[in-house]
Amino acid sequence: MSNRSPISRSVSRRTLLRGVGVAMALPWLESMGHLVSGISARAAASPIAPVGAPAVPNRMIFMYVPNGKVMPDWTPDPLDIGKGYTLPPLLTPLADMKDDFNIVTGLAADKARSYGDGGGDHARAMSAYLTGAHPFKTDGSEPVRAGISVDQIAASRVGELTRLPSLEIGSEPTNAAGSCDTGYSCVYNSTISWRSATTPLPKIYRPKEIFDRLFGTSTAMSEQKKSILDFVQGETAGLKNKVSRNDQRKLDEYFQSIRDIETRIERTAKMAPVAKPDYNVPADIPDNFAEYMQVLCDLIVLAVQTDSTRVISYVVANESSNRTYPEIGIHDGHHQTSHHQNDPRKIAMLRKINTYHIQQLAYLLKKLKSTREGDGTLLDHSMIVYGCGNADGDRHNHDNLPTLICGQAGGTIATGRHIHYNKETPIANLWLSMLDRMDASVDAFGDATGRLAELSA
Image (cartoon, rainbow, N blue to C red; front, side, top):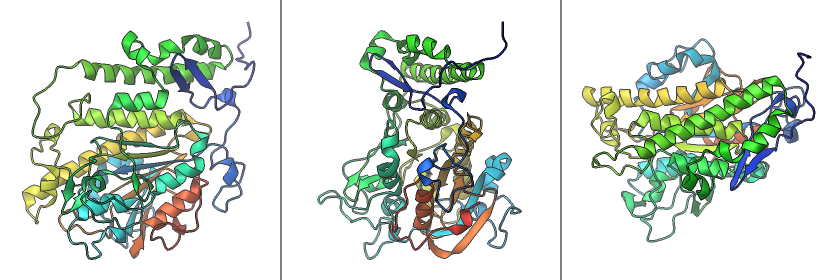
């Protein structure tokens, strides 16, 4: 018998495994034909595209954390730039991935400032972050208004290429009613993505609901207590007969990762309820917040691995969130702690929370980096921005924002550097630069004044 593993016929990149109420996308396979790193084929002529005909799509992912950072522990020296910079203490969890991201300093979100509206820096920090627009101050008695967010501009351009134009998730729900920040509607504190200036997009925060959104699972599955894999079993067997041994192994690993996530979600749902603290804990999520965040990160990886969407926003916690973190010994609320007034005890607690969040980013990046795609990895073909619309949570300043951009965007971003920009450089300049790499270029956005040319490889 031959040891070769021939492919009897090619498999389309858009192939879906279908069952009753299920449409399941596939990861990239050898049998889909050779794919090379780069941005989309439609953008091959772009001046930022590498030589060659790129075919693997880029992804745009935003990971937002609230309440600012301990900025002295986040910020490198402005003169310590380029590849040889010293990693700041808060980024220690990313030490072994230093070559996979850039730390960018000097960027500002000017539209998060008051402009005569008084207090409300948390509300403005989140609502202006991806929109570059100053939100209209209302407690909900009048319609909310900000601007279309950069992720939704990308979704409007490339969304028809995937099952979901975009995916908006969070570890806390969107608050749709009431006033949360000195006269600003709670929508502003808890919404980062805006489909239009007057249409905020709510986040999905239950892992099961995200999973169902990605894979189109039906109520029949829940009632019959079956895995999504059970519903596509026939097509799975047929597919394996068409592909190489390497692809068969990749499919087995992919299906196992889906089964693992299903098992974790099911296990959580079966757990006995715990005493409810003085905090609005979403239902059906892991009690351990680190596990919860990791499940969400796993779902992000599955979403991009299957090309179910190329645009994702993930809000780790809403602005002014007062979540406690007992799993790392922090029993004071995050927001309360961020107003440290130079109290060493509070700064120490805030430093632990900041580090904890960076550990979750490290988990996501390592998952993306370990997942092969084409001649690279999912991380190679992604742009993951980690940041916040407030810098120092005690001062509520919106300049020199804590910003990381991770991944190489198909070879169009040179990583491993500290890039320092002049004070008050709009963060919207970064969003314009990312849209270029999503084949979704626009002439103007928010308060942007141009592109960040220094990102280019």
